[in-house]
Image 1 (cartoon, rainbow, N blue to C red):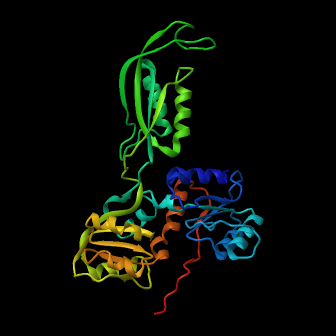
Image 2 (cartoon, rainbow, N blue to C red; image 1 turned 90 degrees about the vertical axis):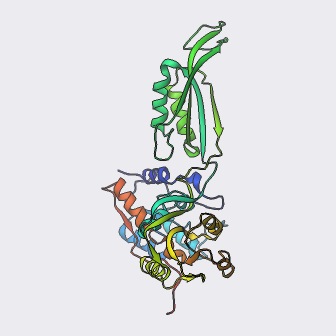
Image 3 (tube, rainbow, N blue to C red; image 1 turned 180 degrees about the vertical axis):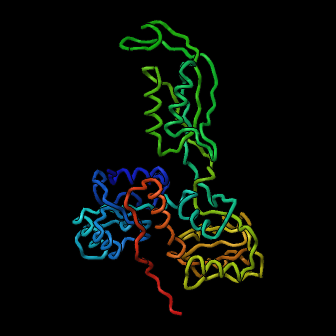
Length: 366
């Protein structure tokens, strides 16, 4: 039987909480992660309709993109809608889990789903994150180097882009003198030892540091392990905000906007005025993406598709690219499909559904 923790642990291996923005509040917002999970509903938002749906189906986990607890709550007295919904969820033992900007910052997430829907290829992250990885440098007797390397790889170290089990190993001589109270696997108390050692260097995402260090200590023969942890400034191309890709064939502006309107089922598209041009290279950012306009311009894309743009934002491109606001809900609406499909693939016998309710608070008068 799956627990709520099993579901959460899987989601956090795919979109680690360490990747969320500093202002965000992703994670388990209420509920007991040790509880058996009777079923899950995936939704963009936490609304009364979605909660009623979970209660009706006797599902005790709701997975949402937008955290219902975003600004600090002073109490859970049911005086407003969010507090009332959370109190009801708690009364029915329903856990609420938010997977927000951490899902925005992985290539396969919100933006990757947008890109897939319009057929983009040759994808890359629009604004890669920094400070997402560390390097482990550890010294081990040469004959134990392969065993330790394999353990570190098994724990998740050594992944670089489309390559796994990446490391660098160099050989040298280490020395140490076991002092009183030591229990060395090599050498004797009070005598300096010289040992042929290998230096193993691997990188790993910061969120799995504890797992990496646990594997290192478990599979290292020394009582006291000599190792270094180094922060990295590298930008890793698979992590970050927004996505850039190319259409298989270029499109005219009118046809491109029509395709967006049809694909994302939007009531209207707000866009800037630019000279008629062919659209092929496209940047996308689900939700509020105004902060990435200049990133898109620097990559000389033909169009940037996002949401929540203000009047003045439309002046920024100065006619150099099409800027299209398709709506916040519209840009992220397929997130619930993405989550439901991913969980069904991982747990094929587990009951998980996309909500039957449209949670968009915005309506269009046509």
